[in-house]
Amino acid sequence: MSHEVSNQDTALQEAIQAIERGETARAQEILRKLLRTAPNNAVYWVWLSAAVDSVKERRYCLQKAYAADPTYEPARRGLMLLGEMPPGEEVAPVRVPHPRAWEAEYRPSVPEPAESRGPALPRQVVVGAVALLALMALSWGAWGAWQRFRPVHLATPQLMIYVTQTATPRPTSTPTPINPLTLGQPTPLALLLPATYTPTPLAVSTPHLVEAYRLGMRAMQEGRWQDALRYFRQTADAEGGHKADLYFYMGEVYRHQKEWAEAADAYRQALKLQAHFAPAETGLAQVLLAQGKPDDAATLAAQAVKDDPNYGLAYLVQAEVALRAEQADDALAALKEAETHLPDSPLVPLYRAEAYLMLGEPQKAYAEAKKAHDRDMTLLPAYKVLGQAAFALGKLDEAVLYFRTYLTYAPGDKAVYRALAEAYLKQGNTDNALAAAKKVVETSPYDADALQLLARVYLARHEGDQAVKTLETAVRVHPNDFNLHMALVEAQLAAGHPGNAFHQLQDTQPLLKKQEQWYTFYYWRAKVLTALDVTDAAIEDWKRVLNAPAGMVPKTWQAEARQALDHLLTPSPTPSLQVAPSPTPTP
Image 1 (cartoon, helix red, strand yellow):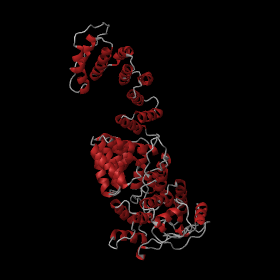
Image 2: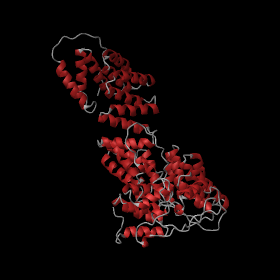
Image 3: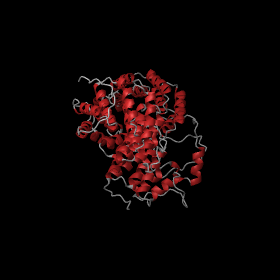
Image 4: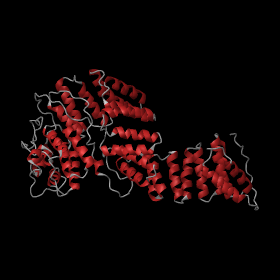
């Protein structure tokens, strides 16, 4: 393919000029928009690699460029210098084949620490694919040496003012791939990234006098949480510990590591230094929500909105609190506000999709979840919501793919394993349904719903005895669960044991409390009595099912009752069996 870009491509020119000025966030925004219209343009991906901040994001962009066109030399050389490809005969940087006006000189805004033990860096390299790092002019061996020996301790404080231009990371942890089932489909490469390449708005922009602050921000962006924490503490010590934003970022580090108590202490220290500090209030609200304190989280999020009505993340937290409380309308109202301040955030459509699922609108949920995925293909929860919406719409193949991808990186989510098992059951794929159902039981071995799901899979596989064993265990653990008793009756019938099913019904009768339970009981007793050829008693129960009040039993049961009565009312000899009378519930 041709890599020449028209001089009329003003958007790309604007992105390149932004890179030259060091405005990487602006460059990323432009290039993302270009990639939405041309997702396989290697040139755009290479330039995006020059604008992103972390090595992992850079690696991803170059892999996308190389996948789009393996002959594109800047992509190949960039991957080579990152260690993703074996080095060729020479690894010196190459110029991007564009007009010279598209090239730029890489000038770090702040010099690296003076104590660096690695080899000295060159002064200039070309922006583009070769603007991966200032290290791109080094040889393959020198690159490896620098990686081994780069400094990790605080350099001598330098008298300079540095104002961060780094976006605050979203609350996303690095997923660890674990194959949930041996299912064989490839997983999107995007999920290997720890964070989106869609930047979130800067939470805090405060001048700091020491180099450690910049190093801490870089470490936090790259997911090196302990390094980030150490640098922020060093900055606080050097500056007297009186700046609230440092404790806010310490809280962010702790929160990303799910160290809730430490995160809460850090956020509270930030608020002690600066009252009505909306980012710290929002961070503390997120911690309280994670600790199961939604009311306190809601109060803090509301205070954050009051203190800074333009802080979009506070509205997102309000939406999350509402979703936890299953208040979909309140969540949608908060998301409307959030979208005005975070128009490109993938979390806004993600949360909106969850709200629409609660409201029983899967088509809208599917569209919003797709939008979230398009904005950030590394957003793992979007795969879960896409799967749920696709399942509700009957798109079973899509649902299975999304659920499997999600579980590869979040293997502990039993709700998604349950949904995956249901999808496989509807597909008739009982082998994979069994594997998924067993995963649910492994996670919660005595959960009633998990055991009932496993029994249903066994029944679909015509393994009635296995279903009976599973449900007998469930009934022993949950002796007062009416639904489990009825499931056991169904399993005993399927296994060819109608006598056992009849005795099980007799044992269950003391549990009957609600009117719908009585009609469920009549349905299963009618089936059992029919199997036992106790015709007169079966006819009475089938009549009760057929004449049940509207909505009390499924229509399929009434159709079955009508068919059974048509058959049973044909005169035939009937053996007698003493059946205990059952009271007829008053509607």
